Image (tube, rainbow, N blue to C red; front, side, top):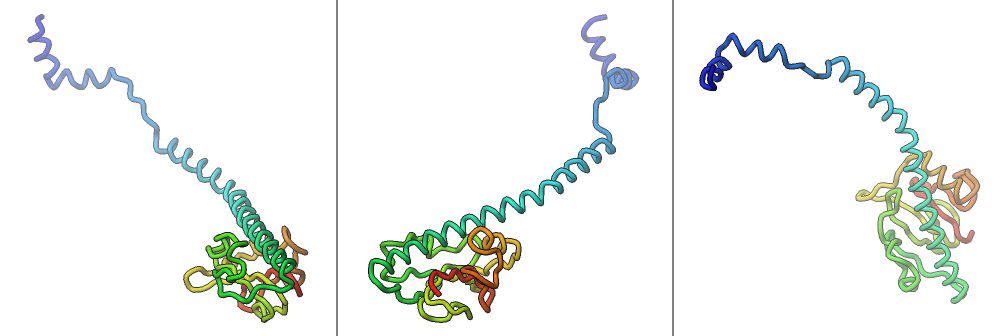
Length: 180
């Protein structure tokens, strides 16, 4: 039998099923795929609470770092000049502090909203002589996550948002009191 005859034999309909039946078929069944999908889903569900805690801790640490850095700059200014800088709008550095504060003061905070310097006026309903307020606006609302706020307070203060140096203001802003 020559090559020509073999080629004709392989193209005949009776020979094709014979080729297919001898080849092993390897594939996953629908049940096996579903089991894998369920296992991956369960693992993802178990990891979500940990991911949330890590995310909250990261944001709380970033806010804590910012507030401590900014308050140190304001306190240094007060010690050197025997007065506090004038009030400023949210996201605006007081002119006297331009050299002492980083641009982070003008950016959105890690929890939304903007930093605001308050001097000798009510800090969102809280009496304070000098305070840094984190307040939101329409373009950058402040996070209302109670766990996040509590974590920030626990890292910086007494763990109670109604007392101490870190409090919640009347419009739900965070007020970090430097001097009462």
